[in-house]
Amino acid sequence: MPGKMQVFNLVVIALQYSLVILLYYFLYHVIKIAVKDLTGLSDPVKNTVLVSSELQAAAGSDTPPPRLVVIADKQALLSQTSFVISDSLTIGRSEHNDLVINDSFVSHEHACISKSKHNYLLADLSSTNGTLVNGQPIEEEIALADGDVIQIGAVTLTFER
Image 1 (cartoon, rainbow, N blue to C red):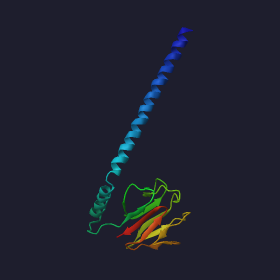
Image 2: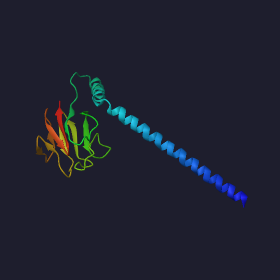
Image 3: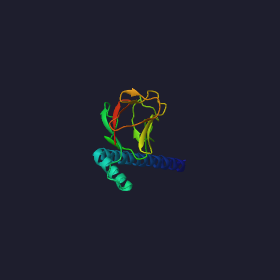
Image 4: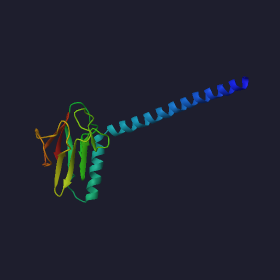
């Protein structure tokens, strides 16, 4: 009997140490993600400028690439104030989108901006609450002009070329 109790006690101790190690491992990853997020939020304009300059260098032109600039974010849903558009930009609540708006009025795959020759086209992807451009709901894909105001949920953006 004493041998079985010793084995049982050793198993219990091993499980306790394993739980402590897993807890520390979890906390390490939480802190690592938090630090990464906080350093990314510290200077969103700098991050946008880096992306913008990289795209300019790749394109070899002096004109900056088009972008969406946040003009109203009532619920502080976005971490950046500017989003560069290369060939396309997907917008929605799902994490796989380029511009994620975590708002219940925004569909998982809400809208998309894509380049077509010399224009950038905005399409509503059959979202539940729709997409507004200059205060008007869009029914089909439309070409964006410099200064167009896009409203998706609680976020208002302007298109800059």
